[in-house]
Image (cartoon, rainbow, N blue to C red; front, side, top):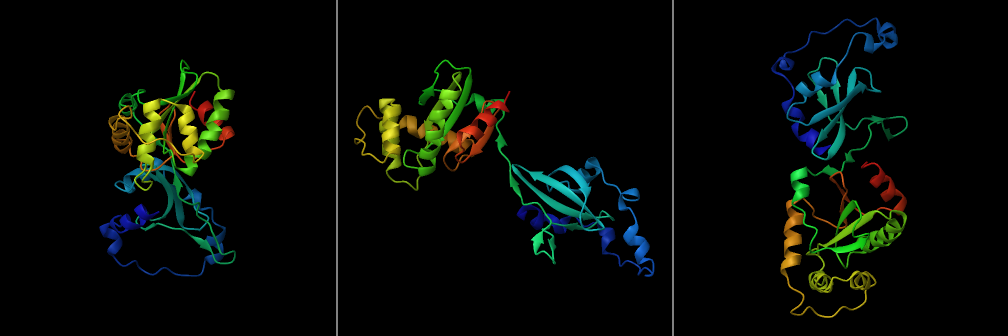
Amino acid sequence: MVFLSAAASGVVSASSSKKAKPKAVGSSSKAMNHNCASCHSLSVEEANKIFKGLGEVKAVKMSPVKGLFEVTVQQRNRQAVAYLDFSKKMLVPGPIFDVATKHSLTPPPEELPRILSKAELDTIPLKNSIVMGNPKGTKRLIVFTDPVCPFCARLHGELKKLVVLEPDLAIYIKMFPLKMHPDAYDKARVILGSNSLEMLEKAFAKEKLPAPGSNDPKEPVDETIKLGESLGIDGTPAMIFPDGRLVSGARDVATLRKMLESTK
């Protein structure tokens, strides 16, 4: 919600600076029973004009708090909820809490997978990859991995199950050693130089690998690092699905199958 909080002050229109005239109080019971939706409405199209510069409005509905619209806003791959008053001049970034229950009424911000464009997908070479599964498979999953990353090792075990369940799947594993792992770079060179899935699995098992030699050049690893950074990858594991979804973090085999299925 930080991106909404930081920009909220710029949404208030000039007319909102005028002091509102006090309204008479006395019809509170009638107001409480009134159906707000019958008098107040906000379309996604109108909300997008109001929220211009803050993100793309995906949905609008009545808030659990009277007098406010609940607006779902997406900026890049981050989605959050904000609130707009019925005058459509005041933005409340949220979250909103229920005092009695001490719980938030606002859904938490959500990180959405980035969708790579076709042009970005076309920049990803299949060379300099360790292939798992069916090399001739029509389904392709690209995985950026670090040979000493424990989360990558966990995902690797699930990928081994996945290729058994998905015989038409080819997984292209690209070495993306992180700077925080000093010995990962040399291990990545040796794994790519040997073009060996077994060598990668030894690294995941924390077995000692030989030092890189003349047959283990730096260039293939450097090219993959440069590619990953250009795609916005800054951690491992990272997976690119056939539809261009860039997903970070390990998943179990059941979730991976569902994610593959949703690309059809």
